[in-house]
Image (cartoon, rainbow, N blue to C red; front, side, top):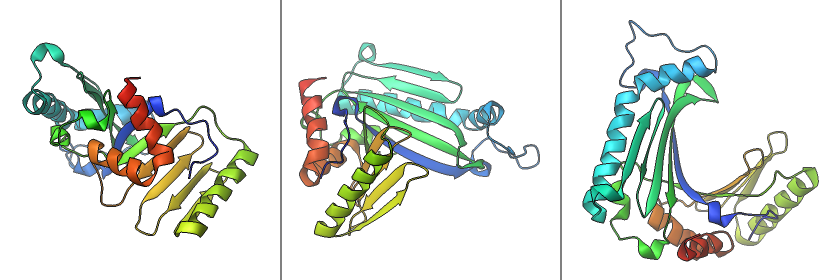
Length: 234
């Protein structure tokens, strides 16, 4: 099953998003801090300051883990930390970590972790995902353009056809431009038209290597081109 979209497998990445209460961030002091009342740059900066130490620590852990587990030398790695974000670059992957307000609720913060692989899963060691303190649980494939109403209807029809043949259910919200297929085992294929993203979660499987291999096995139309692009080094 492949939705009627112009998918861009060469731009695919792995992701993990985690919404947490702002009060749970390590820098929050109840007697001194007030929760943001609305979304905006000031709230993002506030959350970034509260989580700065935790963010820097995770970037250090990924950097050190890449050196230790992948056998890399210092000159093969780059890392950077700024307000609300940081990254680690290696020959095998690019890692980015961001912290800001959760757009769904200004009382919560959103951690966003993203791994862009530069090699295919066959080129990754079995312990590759031990590099990351938090495992990715989504494969994201961008698509070329935002679908219009007719295309949205066609996408939902194809998801419903798949659910009818193989089991599962379809959730759709035309107003937000989102639709999802939830399989019987709890796996989820979701389309976010405004963001231009198709995302895949497979119940019981996480980590970059495992998720890609299982996705290629079960959803070859979606994940096969991603793995091919990585193997080509595009």
